[in-house]
Image (cartoon, helix red, strand yellow):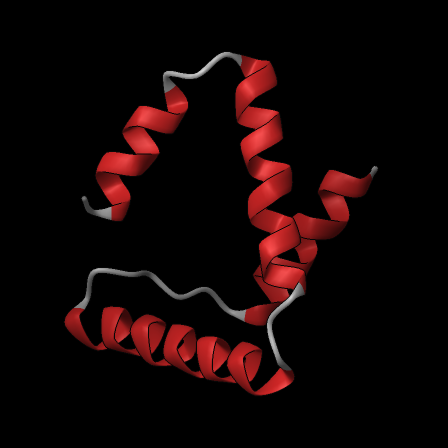
Length: 74
């Protein structure tokens, strides 16, 4: 069963069950070693870089991103 299938099924749960599942998943991440966490971040960076190279992800200038974030805080 793939992650996408699990996600679809999880979204069918009641809000209480989704909250419980989310807590359990987050707790499971706390048990990860620093090396495992770093490996996941590197894999995520590579995935995002590939998306940019393929043109399936859009980039924005840092100034624009920061300006939007600041505007949301108001």
